[in-house]
Image (tube, rainbow, N blue to C red; front, side):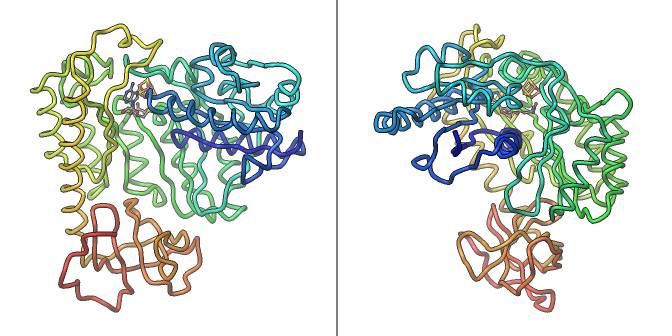
Length: 444
Ligand code: SAM
Ligand code: SF4
Protein backbone atom coordinates (compact mmCIF):
# COMPACT_ATOMS: atom_id res chain seq x y z
CA UNK A 1 0.00 0.00 0.00
CA UNK A 2 1.87 3.04 -1.24
CA UNK A 3 -0.24 5.62 -3.06
CA UNK A 4 -3.38 7.21 -1.61
CA UNK A 5 -5.93 9.48 -3.27
CA UNK A 6 -7.58 11.72 -0.66
CA UNK A 7 -10.70 13.75 -1.46
CA UNK A 8 -12.33 16.20 0.96
CA UNK A 9 -15.98 17.21 1.38
CA UNK A 10 -17.58 19.70 3.76
CA UNK A 11 -16.31 22.36 6.09
CA UNK A 12 -12.91 23.92 6.70
CA UNK A 13 -12.40 21.63 9.66
CA UNK A 14 -12.56 18.68 7.27
CA UNK A 15 -9.92 20.35 5.12
CA UNK A 16 -7.71 20.68 8.22
CA UNK A 17 -8.43 17.05 9.14
CA UNK A 18 -7.38 15.97 5.65
CA UNK A 19 -4.09 17.81 6.18
CA UNK A 20 -3.61 15.82 9.40
CA UNK A 21 -4.42 12.59 7.53
CA UNK A 22 -1.98 13.50 4.77
CA UNK A 23 0.72 14.09 7.39
CA UNK A 24 0.04 10.71 9.02
CA UNK A 25 0.11 8.89 5.68
CA UNK A 26 3.33 10.56 4.52
CA UNK A 27 5.03 9.88 7.86
CA UNK A 28 4.24 6.19 7.24
CA UNK A 29 5.97 6.33 3.84
CA UNK A 30 2.83 6.66 1.72
CA UNK A 31 2.40 9.27 -1.00
CA UNK A 32 -0.67 11.21 -2.11
CA UNK A 33 -1.76 10.99 -5.74
CA UNK A 34 -3.56 13.60 -7.81
CA UNK A 35 -5.80 11.08 -9.61
CA UNK A 36 -7.82 8.15 -8.21
CA UNK A 37 -6.67 6.01 -11.18
CA UNK A 38 -3.08 6.16 -9.88
CA UNK A 39 -3.88 5.13 -6.30
CA UNK A 40 -3.69 1.88 -4.33
CA UNK A 41 -6.23 3.33 -1.89
CA UNK A 42 -8.95 5.97 -2.14
CA UNK A 43 -10.08 7.87 0.95
CA UNK A 44 -13.06 10.21 1.03
CA UNK A 45 -13.15 12.62 3.96
CA UNK A 46 -16.91 13.04 4.23
CA UNK A 47 -19.51 15.44 5.64
CA UNK A 48 -22.88 14.60 7.23
CA UNK A 49 -24.23 18.08 7.95
CA UNK A 50 -27.00 17.93 5.33
CA UNK A 51 -28.47 15.04 3.36
CA UNK A 52 -27.22 16.55 0.12
CA UNK A 53 -23.60 16.22 1.36
CA UNK A 54 -24.11 12.50 1.97
CA UNK A 55 -25.76 12.02 -1.43
CA UNK A 56 -22.73 13.54 -3.16
CA UNK A 57 -20.41 11.08 -1.42
CA UNK A 58 -22.66 8.11 -2.26
CA UNK A 59 -22.60 9.23 -5.91
CA UNK A 60 -18.82 9.40 -5.86
CA UNK A 61 -18.62 5.91 -4.31
CA UNK A 62 -20.60 4.66 -7.31
CA UNK A 63 -17.83 5.98 -9.57
CA UNK A 64 -15.17 4.23 -7.48
CA UNK A 65 -17.16 0.98 -7.62
CA UNK A 66 -16.67 1.06 -11.41
CA UNK A 67 -12.93 1.70 -10.98
CA UNK A 68 -12.71 -1.18 -8.53
CA UNK A 69 -14.27 -3.61 -11.00
CA UNK A 70 -11.13 -3.23 -13.12
CA UNK A 71 -8.78 -3.16 -10.12
CA UNK A 72 -10.06 -5.55 -7.45
CA UNK A 73 -7.06 -4.82 -5.16
CA UNK A 74 -8.05 -1.15 -4.82
CA UNK A 75 -8.96 -0.19 -1.21
CA UNK A 76 -11.78 2.36 -0.83
CA UNK A 77 -12.36 4.09 2.50
CA UNK A 78 -14.80 6.65 3.92
CA UNK A 79 -13.49 8.88 6.70
CA UNK A 80 -14.98 11.72 8.73
CA UNK A 81 -18.46 12.72 9.83
CA UNK A 82 -20.55 10.63 7.43
CA UNK A 83 -18.45 7.57 8.26
CA UNK A 84 -19.06 8.17 11.96
CA UNK A 85 -22.72 8.95 11.36
CA UNK A 86 -23.57 5.82 9.39
CA UNK A 87 -20.89 3.62 11.00
CA UNK A 88 -21.02 -0.07 10.14
CA UNK A 89 -24.22 0.45 8.14
CA UNK A 90 -22.09 2.13 5.50
CA UNK A 91 -19.75 -0.85 5.33
CA UNK A 92 -22.57 -3.41 5.25
CA UNK A 93 -24.61 -1.62 2.62
CA UNK A 94 -21.89 -0.63 0.25
CA UNK A 95 -20.32 -3.12 -2.15
CA UNK A 96 -17.41 -0.77 -2.69
CA UNK A 97 -16.22 0.24 0.80
CA UNK A 98 -13.39 -1.58 2.59
CA UNK A 99 -12.81 0.93 5.38
CA UNK A 100 -14.94 3.23 7.53
CA UNK A 101 -13.03 5.54 9.88
CA UNK A 102 -14.50 8.27 12.09
CA UNK A 103 -12.90 11.64 12.99
CA UNK A 104 -10.98 10.17 15.94
CA UNK A 105 -9.31 7.31 14.06
CA UNK A 106 -6.82 9.14 11.83
CA UNK A 107 -3.75 8.33 13.90
CA UNK A 108 -4.11 4.67 12.86
CA UNK A 109 -4.86 5.32 9.18
CA UNK A 110 -1.83 3.55 7.64
CA UNK A 111 -2.48 0.40 9.65
CA UNK A 112 -6.24 0.56 8.98
CA UNK A 113 -5.62 0.86 5.23
CA UNK A 114 -3.27 -2.13 5.27
CA UNK A 115 -5.80 -4.23 7.18
CA UNK A 116 -8.62 -3.12 4.89
CA UNK A 117 -6.74 -4.66 1.95
CA UNK A 118 -7.54 -8.06 3.52
CA UNK A 119 -10.97 -7.61 5.15
CA UNK A 120 -13.53 -4.81 5.74
CA UNK A 121 -12.51 -2.61 8.69
CA UNK A 122 -14.47 -0.09 10.80
CA UNK A 123 -12.90 2.30 13.32
CA UNK A 124 -15.73 4.44 14.65
CA UNK A 125 -14.89 4.86 18.32
CA UNK A 126 -15.08 8.47 19.49
CA UNK A 127 -12.19 9.39 21.77
CA UNK A 128 -12.71 12.17 24.32
CA UNK A 129 -8.97 12.82 24.48
CA UNK A 130 -7.91 12.74 20.82
CA UNK A 131 -6.76 16.17 19.60
CA UNK A 132 -3.96 15.21 17.15
CA UNK A 133 -1.99 18.01 18.82
CA UNK A 134 1.33 16.19 18.40
CA UNK A 135 0.87 15.38 14.69
CA UNK A 136 2.38 17.44 11.90
CA UNK A 137 -0.18 18.23 9.19
CA UNK A 138 0.81 18.30 5.53
CA UNK A 139 -0.55 21.64 4.36
CA UNK A 140 -1.15 22.65 0.78
CA UNK A 141 0.51 25.68 -0.79
CA UNK A 142 -0.81 29.13 0.17
CA UNK A 143 -0.46 31.94 2.66
CA UNK A 144 -3.18 30.77 5.10
CA UNK A 145 -2.76 27.93 7.61
CA UNK A 146 -5.85 26.39 9.22
CA UNK A 147 -5.25 25.33 12.81
CA UNK A 148 -7.83 23.29 14.73
CA UNK A 149 -7.81 24.58 18.31
CA UNK A 150 -10.83 22.66 19.53
CA UNK A 151 -12.55 19.46 18.42
CA UNK A 152 -16.13 18.26 18.99
CA UNK A 153 -19.12 20.23 20.24
CA UNK A 154 -21.17 20.27 23.46
CA UNK A 155 -23.99 22.53 22.27
CA UNK A 156 -26.39 19.93 20.78
CA UNK A 157 -28.46 22.30 18.64
CA UNK A 158 -31.55 20.23 17.86
CA UNK A 159 -30.92 20.14 14.07
CA UNK A 160 -27.21 19.36 14.14
CA UNK A 161 -25.38 16.09 13.73
CA UNK A 162 -21.93 17.40 14.70
CA UNK A 163 -21.98 16.47 18.43
CA UNK A 164 -22.81 12.89 17.37
CA UNK A 165 -20.17 12.66 14.65
CA UNK A 166 -17.34 14.56 16.33
CA UNK A 167 -18.01 13.84 19.98
CA UNK A 168 -17.47 16.04 23.04
CA UNK A 169 -15.70 19.37 23.01
CA UNK A 170 -11.97 19.35 23.82
CA UNK A 171 -9.32 22.05 23.40
CA UNK A 172 -5.63 21.73 22.60
CA UNK A 173 -3.14 23.24 25.08
CA UNK A 174 -2.25 26.87 24.31
CA UNK A 175 1.50 26.09 24.24
CA UNK A 176 0.93 23.35 21.63
CA UNK A 177 -1.05 25.76 19.47
CA UNK A 178 1.50 28.56 19.68
CA UNK A 179 4.15 26.03 18.63
CA UNK A 180 1.93 25.03 15.68
CA UNK A 181 1.56 28.70 14.70
CA UNK A 182 5.35 29.20 14.88
CA UNK A 183 5.95 26.14 12.71
CA UNK A 184 3.35 27.34 10.17
CA UNK A 185 5.07 30.75 10.01
CA UNK A 186 8.48 29.08 9.62
CA UNK A 187 7.02 27.14 6.65
CA UNK A 188 6.00 30.41 4.97
CA UNK A 189 2.36 30.87 6.04
CA UNK A 190 1.47 34.48 6.92
CA UNK A 191 -2.07 34.08 8.25
CA UNK A 192 -3.58 31.57 10.67
CA UNK A 193 -7.27 30.73 10.97
CA UNK A 194 -8.23 29.06 14.24
CA UNK A 195 -10.92 26.43 13.81
CA UNK A 196 -13.46 25.01 16.23
CA UNK A 197 -17.20 24.28 16.13
CA UNK A 198 -17.68 26.90 18.87
CA UNK A 199 -14.14 28.21 18.67
CA UNK A 200 -14.61 31.01 21.21
CA UNK A 201 -15.55 28.51 23.93
CA UNK A 202 -11.92 27.34 23.66
CA UNK A 203 -10.50 26.55 27.11
CA UNK A 204 -7.49 24.37 27.82
CA UNK A 205 -8.02 24.35 31.59
CA UNK A 206 -5.82 27.39 32.17
CA UNK A 207 -6.38 29.67 29.17
CA UNK A 208 -9.44 30.90 27.28
CA UNK A 209 -9.83 32.03 23.69
CA UNK A 210 -8.87 35.63 24.52
CA UNK A 211 -5.56 34.33 25.95
CA UNK A 212 -4.99 32.33 22.77
CA UNK A 213 -5.58 35.39 20.54
CA UNK A 214 -3.25 37.54 22.65
CA UNK A 215 -0.49 34.91 22.74
CA UNK A 216 -0.74 34.38 18.97
CA UNK A 217 -0.57 38.13 18.36
CA UNK A 218 3.00 38.00 19.68
CA UNK A 219 4.25 35.41 17.19
CA UNK A 220 6.92 37.02 15.06
CA UNK A 221 6.54 36.84 11.28
CA UNK A 222 2.80 36.21 11.48
CA UNK A 223 0.76 38.93 9.77
CA UNK A 224 -2.89 38.02 10.35
CA UNK A 225 -5.15 36.03 12.68
CA UNK A 226 -8.75 34.95 11.99
CA UNK A 227 -11.06 32.36 13.50
CA UNK A 228 -14.27 30.47 12.73
CA UNK A 229 -16.97 29.77 13.91
CA UNK A 230 -17.65 31.49 17.19
CA UNK A 231 -20.92 30.82 19.02
CA UNK A 232 -22.88 33.98 19.93
CA UNK A 233 -23.38 32.78 23.54
CA UNK A 234 -19.61 32.41 24.04
CA UNK A 235 -18.70 35.88 22.72
CA UNK A 236 -17.32 37.23 26.00
CA UNK A 237 -16.09 40.78 26.65
CA UNK A 238 -12.61 39.28 27.03
CA UNK A 239 -12.70 37.87 23.49
CA UNK A 240 -14.06 41.12 22.03
CA UNK A 241 -11.40 43.15 23.87
CA UNK A 242 -8.66 40.81 22.61
CA UNK A 243 -9.99 41.20 19.05
CA UNK A 244 -9.99 44.97 19.39
CA UNK A 245 -6.56 45.23 20.99
CA UNK A 246 -4.55 42.62 19.07
CA UNK A 247 -3.10 44.23 15.97
CA UNK A 248 -2.97 40.99 13.98
CA UNK A 249 -6.55 39.86 14.71
CA UNK A 250 -8.49 40.96 11.64
CA UNK A 251 -11.71 43.03 11.91
CA UNK A 252 -13.96 40.27 10.63
CA UNK A 253 -16.12 37.65 12.27
CA UNK A 254 -18.51 34.92 11.15
CA UNK A 255 -21.33 34.90 13.68
CA UNK A 256 -23.95 32.22 12.92
CA UNK A 257 -27.49 33.41 13.67
CA UNK A 258 -29.61 30.55 12.16
CA UNK A 259 -32.92 32.40 12.68
CA UNK A 260 -34.09 35.78 13.96
CA UNK A 261 -37.28 34.36 15.50
CA UNK A 262 -37.12 33.65 19.23
CA UNK A 263 -39.52 30.66 19.08
CA UNK A 264 -37.38 29.12 16.31
CA UNK A 265 -34.11 29.86 18.16
CA UNK A 266 -35.60 28.24 21.23
CA UNK A 267 -36.73 25.15 19.27
CA UNK A 268 -33.21 24.96 17.84
CA UNK A 269 -31.77 25.11 21.39
CA UNK A 270 -29.39 27.84 20.24
CA UNK A 271 -29.10 29.15 23.86
CA UNK A 272 -29.56 32.85 22.91
CA UNK A 273 -32.48 35.13 22.13
CA UNK A 274 -32.51 37.60 19.28
CA UNK A 275 -31.95 40.41 21.78
CA UNK A 276 -28.86 38.68 23.16
CA UNK A 277 -27.52 38.11 19.65
CA UNK A 278 -28.20 41.75 18.77
CA UNK A 279 -26.22 42.78 21.83
CA UNK A 280 -23.23 40.75 20.67
CA UNK A 281 -23.38 42.54 17.30
CA UNK A 282 -23.64 45.91 19.09
CA UNK A 283 -20.64 45.15 21.35
CA UNK A 284 -18.55 43.94 18.41
CA UNK A 285 -19.36 47.02 16.32
CA UNK A 286 -18.67 49.36 19.24
CA UNK A 287 -15.29 47.78 19.99
CA UNK A 288 -14.21 47.23 16.37
CA UNK A 289 -15.75 49.93 14.15
CA UNK A 290 -16.37 48.75 10.61
CA UNK A 291 -15.98 45.06 11.54
CA UNK A 292 -17.14 42.76 8.71
CA UNK A 293 -19.88 40.36 9.78
CA UNK A 294 -21.09 37.20 8.10
CA UNK A 295 -23.55 34.56 9.25
CA UNK A 296 -25.26 31.18 8.76
CA UNK A 297 -29.05 30.94 8.34
CA UNK A 298 -31.29 27.88 8.16
CA UNK A 299 -34.67 28.34 6.46
CA UNK A 300 -37.62 25.98 6.86
CA UNK A 301 -36.84 24.61 10.32
CA UNK A 302 -39.88 22.67 11.69
CA UNK A 303 -42.38 25.24 12.97
CA UNK A 304 -40.87 28.21 11.09
CA UNK A 305 -43.93 30.27 10.10
CA UNK A 306 -44.07 32.87 7.34
CA UNK A 307 -43.79 35.55 10.08
CA UNK A 308 -40.73 33.83 11.61
CA UNK A 309 -39.10 33.86 8.20
CA UNK A 310 -39.99 37.52 7.59
CA UNK A 311 -38.38 38.36 10.94
CA UNK A 312 -35.14 36.70 9.76
CA UNK A 313 -35.24 38.50 6.42
CA UNK A 314 -35.85 41.88 8.06
CA UNK A 315 -33.19 41.32 10.74
CA UNK A 316 -30.66 40.54 8.02
CA UNK A 317 -31.56 43.85 6.37
CA UNK A 318 -31.07 45.64 9.70
CA UNK A 319 -27.67 44.06 10.44
CA UNK A 320 -26.51 44.26 6.83
CA UNK A 321 -24.14 41.29 6.94
CA UNK A 322 -21.24 41.41 4.52
CA UNK A 323 -22.09 37.88 3.43
CA UNK A 324 -24.14 34.88 4.53
CA UNK A 325 -24.24 31.10 4.13
CA UNK A 326 -27.88 30.23 3.59
CA UNK A 327 -29.21 26.68 3.98
CA UNK A 328 -32.49 24.81 3.64
CA UNK A 329 -33.19 22.76 6.75
CA UNK A 330 -32.24 19.13 6.25
CA UNK A 331 -33.50 16.61 8.83
CA UNK A 332 -30.61 14.51 10.16
CA UNK A 333 -30.97 11.11 11.81
CA UNK A 334 -29.82 11.00 15.48
CA UNK A 335 -30.69 14.66 16.12
CA UNK A 336 -33.62 15.75 18.30
CA UNK A 337 -35.40 17.52 15.44
CA UNK A 338 -35.23 14.37 13.29
CA UNK A 339 -38.34 13.08 15.04
CA UNK A 340 -40.29 16.31 14.53
CA UNK A 341 -42.80 16.67 11.74
CA UNK A 342 -41.58 18.97 9.00
CA UNK A 343 -44.00 21.88 8.57
CA UNK A 344 -42.38 23.75 5.68
CA UNK A 345 -42.66 22.19 2.22
CA UNK A 346 -39.59 21.81 -0.01
CA UNK A 347 -41.14 24.36 -2.34
CA UNK A 348 -41.57 26.94 0.45
CA UNK A 349 -38.03 26.27 1.70
CA UNK A 350 -36.77 26.90 -1.83
CA UNK A 351 -38.72 30.17 -2.11
CA UNK A 352 -37.45 31.40 1.27
CA UNK A 353 -33.90 30.50 0.36
CA UNK A 354 -34.10 32.29 -3.00
CA UNK A 355 -35.48 35.41 -1.34
CA UNK A 356 -32.63 35.51 1.18
CA UNK A 357 -30.02 34.84 -1.51
CA UNK A 358 -31.36 37.73 -3.64
CA UNK A 359 -31.59 40.04 -0.66
CA UNK A 360 -28.06 39.20 0.54
CA UNK A 361 -26.64 39.61 -2.95
CA UNK A 362 -28.12 43.11 -3.08
CA UNK A 363 -26.78 44.04 0.38
CA UNK A 364 -23.31 42.61 -0.31
CA UNK A 365 -23.27 44.53 -3.61
CA UNK A 366 -24.23 47.78 -1.87
CA UNK A 367 -21.58 47.31 0.82
CA UNK A 368 -18.95 46.64 -1.85
CA UNK A 369 -20.06 49.62 -3.95
CA UNK A 370 -19.64 51.77 -0.85
CA UNK A 371 -16.00 50.68 -0.64
CA UNK A 372 -15.14 52.01 -4.11
CA UNK A 373 -12.64 54.83 -3.68
CA UNK A 374 -11.37 53.56 -0.30
CA UNK A 375 -7.97 52.04 0.49
CA UNK A 376 -7.50 48.39 1.44
CA UNK A 377 -4.50 46.39 2.57
CA UNK A 378 -4.38 43.06 0.78
CA UNK A 379 -2.48 39.93 1.77
CA UNK A 380 -1.53 38.68 -1.69
CA UNK A 381 -2.31 35.00 -2.35
CA UNK A 382 -1.36 34.48 -6.02
CA UNK A 383 -2.76 34.57 -9.52
CA UNK A 384 -6.49 35.19 -9.98
CA UNK A 385 -8.30 32.08 -11.16
CA UNK A 386 -10.09 33.74 -14.07
CA UNK A 387 -7.32 35.94 -15.40
CA UNK A 388 -3.63 35.00 -15.35
CA UNK A 389 -2.70 38.68 -15.75
CA UNK A 390 -4.25 39.49 -12.36
CA UNK A 391 -3.33 38.79 -8.76
CA UNK A 392 -5.74 38.32 -5.86
CA UNK A 393 -5.70 38.42 -2.10
CA UNK A 394 -7.88 39.19 0.90
CA UNK A 395 -8.42 42.54 2.55
CA UNK A 396 -8.42 42.85 6.35
CA UNK A 397 -12.23 42.46 6.19
CA UNK A 398 -11.81 39.18 4.24
CA UNK A 399 -12.96 40.61 0.91
CA UNK A 400 -11.43 39.09 -2.20
CA UNK A 401 -9.54 41.83 -4.06
CA UNK A 402 -8.33 41.33 -7.63
CA UNK A 403 -5.70 43.63 -9.19
CA UNK A 404 -3.28 43.79 -12.12
CA UNK A 405 -0.18 41.63 -11.68
CA UNK A 406 2.57 44.01 -10.58
CA UNK A 407 4.92 41.29 -9.43
CA UNK A 408 3.87 41.39 -5.75
CA UNK A 409 4.79 37.95 -4.39
CA UNK A 410 2.31 35.74 -2.46
CA UNK A 411 2.54 36.46 1.27
CA UNK A 412 3.27 40.18 0.84
CA UNK A 413 0.94 42.97 1.94
CA UNK A 414 -0.09 45.44 -0.77
CA UNK A 415 -2.03 48.68 -0.28
CA UNK A 416 -4.57 49.32 -3.05
CA UNK A 417 -7.40 51.62 -3.92
CA UNK A 418 -10.75 49.97 -4.61
CA UNK A 419 -11.81 50.97 -8.12
CA UNK A 420 -14.69 48.57 -8.83
CA UNK A 421 -16.87 45.94 -7.22
CA UNK A 422 -19.30 43.05 -7.57
CA UNK A 423 -21.24 41.43 -4.68
CA UNK A 424 -18.39 38.88 -4.40
CA UNK A 425 -15.24 40.73 -5.40
CA UNK A 426 -13.48 44.07 -5.13
CA UNK A 427 -11.18 45.34 -7.86
CA UNK A 428 -8.06 47.19 -6.76
CA UNK A 429 -5.53 49.46 -8.42
CA UNK A 430 -2.31 51.07 -7.31
CA UNK A 431 -2.87 54.01 -4.94
CA UNK A 432 -1.74 56.50 -7.55
CA UNK A 433 -5.01 55.89 -9.39
CA UNK A 434 -7.38 57.78 -7.16
CA UNK A 435 -10.40 58.38 -9.38
CA UNK A 436 -13.23 55.86 -8.96
CA UNK A 437 -14.51 54.29 -12.19
CA UNK A 438 -17.38 55.83 -14.07
CA UNK A 439 -19.31 52.57 -14.30
CA UNK A 440 -19.93 49.85 -11.79
CA UNK A 441 -18.55 46.43 -12.82
CA UNK A 442 -21.44 44.01 -12.64
CA UNK A 443 -19.82 40.65 -13.38
CA UNK A 444 -16.58 39.13 -12.11
N1 SAM B 1 -20.64 25.28 14.90
C1 SAM B 1 -21.08 26.26 14.03
C2 SAM B 1 -22.21 27.04 14.69
O1 SAM B 1 -22.75 26.67 15.67
O2 SAM B 1 -22.60 28.00 14.13
C3 SAM B 1 -21.53 25.76 12.69
C4 SAM B 1 -21.19 24.38 12.25
S1 SAM B 1 -22.11 23.72 10.94
C5 SAM B 1 -20.86 22.76 10.20
C6 SAM B 1 -22.29 24.99 9.76
C7 SAM B 1 -23.71 25.41 9.50
O3 SAM B 1 -24.43 24.37 8.90
C8 SAM B 1 -24.52 25.76 10.72
O4 SAM B 1 -24.24 27.03 11.23
C9 SAM B 1 -25.94 25.67 10.19
O5 SAM B 1 -26.36 26.88 9.63
C10 SAM B 1 -25.81 24.62 9.10
N2 SAM B 1 -26.49 23.38 9.48
C11 SAM B 1 -26.16 22.53 10.48
N3 SAM B 1 -27.03 21.51 10.54
C12 SAM B 1 -27.95 21.72 9.54
C13 SAM B 1 -29.10 21.03 9.11
N4 SAM B 1 -29.52 19.91 9.70
N5 SAM B 1 -29.79 21.52 8.04
C14 SAM B 1 -29.38 22.66 7.42
N6 SAM B 1 -28.30 23.36 7.81
C15 SAM B 1 -27.58 22.90 8.85
FE1 SF4 C 1 -23.80 22.05 15.49
FE2 SF4 C 1 -24.81 23.80 17.23
FE3 SF4 C 1 -22.46 22.57 17.72
FE4 SF4 C 1 -22.61 24.43 15.80
S1 SF4 C 1 -22.96 24.76 17.99
S2 SF4 C 1 -21.63 22.42 15.67
S3 SF4 C 1 -24.63 24.08 14.97
S4 SF4 C 1 -24.45 21.61 17.60
